[in-house]
Length: 433
Ligand code: ADP
Image (cartoon, rainbow, N blue to C red; front, side, top):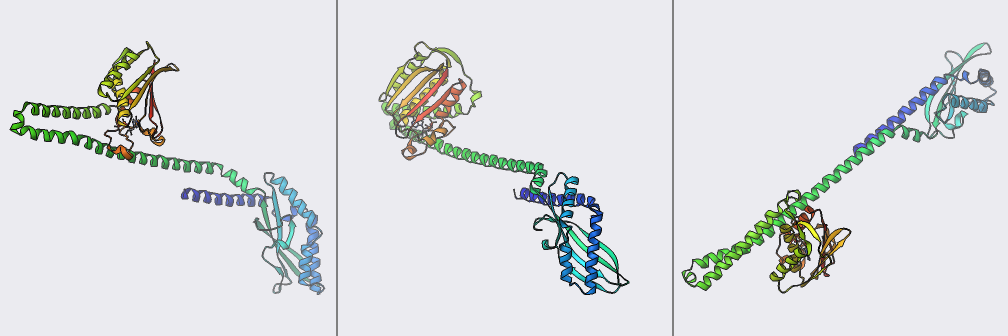
C-alpha cells in the first residue's frame, strides 16, 4: 500500500508538471509579444515609458515616480480585458486567471552607463495587467523582455523591461484528477486485490489452525477412549494367566465376558472412525421404501431396551408415510442423536414427527444441559466437541453429529439445532418425502 501511495503521489506530481508544461506551451504559442493584443496600445505604452524616462533624465522625476507611472498606466484595464478574451478564445477548455508582473526597468544611456531604475522579484504588487489577486497558487508561464530605443539630447538611449506572466487554471485539481482516473482505478483495484489476498491468507491460516487444534483434540480423545479398554484387556489377560481363575468356571466366564465387551468397544470405536473417514459423496446408500413410523418405532424400542431408565416419549403425526431411505445408516444417525441426549444429561426425550412444507420432519427434544448459542454453528463439524465445565469427562470423539449431518445430507435432507444452555436441546431432521 505504501508503494501504491508513493506511485499515485509520483503520478500526481508528474501530471501536474505535465499540465503546467501544456499550459505554458499553449499560452506561449499565442503570446509571443504584446503586439498581438493591440499594436496601437502597445506603442502608446512605449511612448509613455519613453516620456517617463526622459523626464527622469531631465531630473524631473525620481525612480519611484517611474515605477508608479509604469504600474498605473491608463491602458491596464483595456489590455487585461484583451488578453483575457484572447485566452478565452484560444484556450476554450480552461478557465484561466493571469497576472503579468513587472520585474525590471533598466535604462541604458550609452554603452557604459546603465541605470537600473527598478529590479525586483516577481511580486503581485507589481502587477501590470491581469486579474490574479495572488501569485501563491499560480505558476510562471513565461518572461518577456522588451527593448525600446530613443534619443535624448542627441544621445541614444535604450529601455529594457522584463515582466513575467503567471497563470492559475481554475479547478486544475479536478482536471488532473480526471486525467488520473485510470491510474486511480488501477491502484484502488490492486489495493483491493492485495487486501483480498491478505484476508484469504489469514482465513486459510485460521482454518489451518482450527484443523490442527481439532486434530490434536481428536488424538487426545481417541487415546483416552482406547486407554480404558486396553487397560482392562491387559488386566484381564493377566488374571486369566492365573491357574486358580481358569479352574473356577464362574470367574473364568466373567473375565471372558469382560474381554469380549472391551473387544466390542474397541471394534465400535474403530468402526466409528472408519465410517466417518468417508466424505459425503462417498457414502453408498442402500435405499429402500419404508413406512417411516414403523422404522422409527423399531429404533425407539431398541433404545428403550438399551436405556431402560430414560423416558422416551413419541408424538408421531405422519401415519402411513412412506420414505425412501437407507435403514442402516439412518438408524445409526438417529441413535447418535438419542444417545447424545442421554450423554449430555437428559432424562426425558420427546420424538415428534410431522410433515412441514412437503418435508418429513423428525425432532428430538431433550431436557439435558443444552448448548451455548455460539457453539451451535460448529456442532456438525468433524471432531468438534463442546469443551466446558463438567463436559470434560463425557466420552466422545466429536464424530456423532458429523455422521448425522453427512448421512442426512446424503439423503438430500438437513439438520438443525435449537438450544439454550441449561434448557435442553432440540435437533430437527428434515427428509424429502
Ligand atoms: P461427541 O462424541 O462429543 O458426543 P458429537 O458430534 O455427537 O460428539 O457431538 C458434538 C458435541 O455436541 C458434543 O461434544 C456435545 O458437547 C454437543 N452435544 C451433542 N448433542 C447434545 C445434546 N443433546 N445436548 C447437549 N450437548 C450436545
